[in-house]
Image (cartoon, chains in turn blue, red):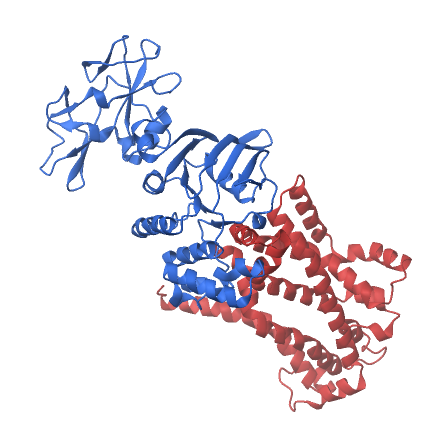
Length: 364
Length: 276
């Protein structure tokens, strides 16, 4: 296990910068998730960390060892790939033991360690099968086995759950978290799925266009997004983001004047207000307004009420959830019937409002 | 899919028609070998020998240096396979995996070489081999065949390697292999069907050559390959076509046997790209 220090690592492809200077200290045993939409540079960073891509500049250290220019095999890290990357011509036993064999570990020791790893992951009965005879979940377990058997300094995981179906993904998510808790190896995990990031990470690194947007623990990331992108990306459904007129003390929302306390010198006239769907409630509250739902979706115990307000321009941010394309959303706990033809009374507490500078997109 | 009777008739009819066209020369080869000289000159021709002349095979095998010719063909074909596979595996892998500046142009340039007819290259190759004193040696054929084989097999293998996910080598490298180690320990074993298909293609191309053997080996009787040797069986006044056909059967058999055994690999190797 090791501390990973990444200092100003960047990656250019000709004139295109895939990764802007990236610095991060990952503590020994920490589970860090790099999350962001496609093309945000998260996989590039992971590959640089693994040694599979050379960095254009910067330095990577594992504990005090500079590994920036070391070959992948000399870094003492293990990697789990999205498509499992199991060697199809080898049995599960040989797949798991491959890394040990490359390191010239004795065959007795390999056999013992492979058995142990297989037992940990519950694949002991599959050891003599070839990868093509395994299900997706089993393949992913074998891939994890190949990683843990070497007892590396760090695990790197590149979207390891993306190829699994939804149910198995939830199951494996919990299994990977449990495995991390048990063996405590420093882990860097890449995903585009914010739910994976939120549920698994000790710390989340949110990225966009090769630039780190925010580094925080999941709760902080959810509660205190530093910019519009972070606000829109984290949360499911995503935060409602809408333009609002600002006169220096109040903003206008849904026809109501809402007092806000903005410390910084925001440009008078334009702010973007953010309100999480779960912070909109049915019935009266501190700020109450009427809407005519355009669509009501029932999830059983709760409902998604979609509505539009012509006074506000809806702001799209980041890789917003599909639901956010359908309009503004209120996520309300209600088991009764809600009709799309009747006006509904919704309310929110101004304390739950997020405000962003319309120009810089930074949180106010 | 359920077929109507008409569809079935059309389908099987087409298959039988195509098979007849393809198999007729092979049938005619055996028919010629097993017929007597008299039967061969009949008009209309006889499609079935009255009494099959099986002894023609032992006669040809004993009277003519067929074993030597086959041996020379084998050395040439195996040599060409080894040389061209060594080059094209590395070249195809490089074209598939690394993309240095100009690699696309280089790839196309290699393919252009395949577009030149073999006979066009005979004269420059002859000049080169003569200047280095190789004319008459089997090495000339091995090298000359490889110049024909490598462009095509390089592209064939590049296509095959393209279908293998890069993550396999990356996983091997993280596991401690060098890039070359990852290629030999992981990519090569995984590519066996593609390699077998390509090697077989190379073997057949070399085995079937006549033009180069005729040009480079005409004065080296001891190095004649089977195809070259058979053509010398044609007499100035009389030609025993049944003997020539029997010798041709000996030349065709190895290829048929190889195809029978490697057919599974061959089809798998050639269609691997399409499965993805």
